[in-house]
Image (cartoon, rainbow, N blue to C red; front, side, top):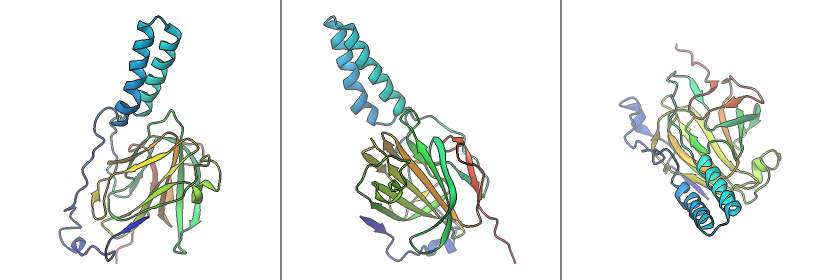
Length: 241
């Protein structure tokens, strides 16, 4: 399924400095993502019942699972860098790819891929400030994130952001071996600030950032990153006449 802006143009950027009239409002603002209530509370309830019935081992098992779920859906605050050319990590995890790719449109781009284990924070953040110009959902597989075919076959949600200067940056949520759902809250036309929490993948996944060629990567394979606070790249400075 693909959603796109009606004409792909945002003429309002010519006035008011690309003012974010349709500013996106964060929904993931609590200490834990709302999913923690759906998945965590039942586990704690079973743990309590098992304890009351004199089954401490069962109680400990379900209590441990409840703590794991709570940790998975944690949603810590982060200090967002403010540099004009800064690109922040869209997720917590480990960088598994930094390299040049060819986009579906035939253009070259820099892609930085981040693997999220089940122990990482899974709330996704916008890598740059920009307006959503397209949201594309595709794929039907759930391959391991390290599988090269996962890049194109796995269930994914690609969001294209148009920055105030017209440059496009993509951020792609990709499911993994045990991930089964992608949450992406923004709508076409909404303006996302850099570092804003815009979505979530559960449970274990990959998040890619696709940047204009000429951007400089600040990370390499194996680098540990934190969503919203780790600088992963710097956009190329545009020359003025």
